[in-house]
Image (cartoon, rainbow, N blue to C red; front, side):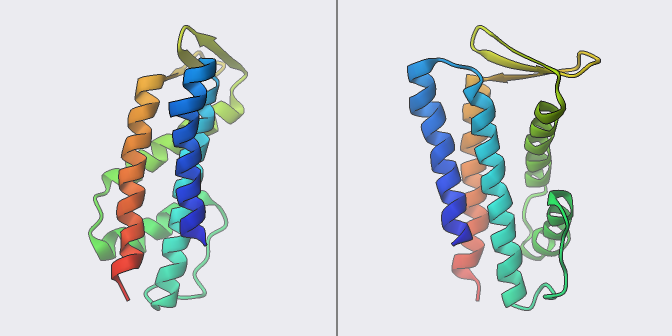
Length: 154
């Protein structure tokens, strides 16, 4: 169920960037793509943690209150167990940071084909179509690899 929802979030992200964006050329859509990628990772990590609880690799009493704690549990128990490249942790953290900055940002605007997020100190995050496409491609690969763990184990 969680696996299917994660895959659905990736499909939505893909549709937004490959179809909707091409039609409307609205850079604000890029943040929606990032949100769907993040949600896909969130669901994937939840699915893996639940899977590991079923295998008794993670104690059923271990829980998390927020995404950061979930990511830490994933890092400690799953990345280590399966020898997953730790680059995925940096990748997920960067996606989350972009969304966090977007949520607290007072200044956002579009410039040509770029969505710009700025904080009060004018630190800027730029979302450009090609970069978001690359992020989506990388996310699909990572999530596919993570979901395979549940196929071949147990």
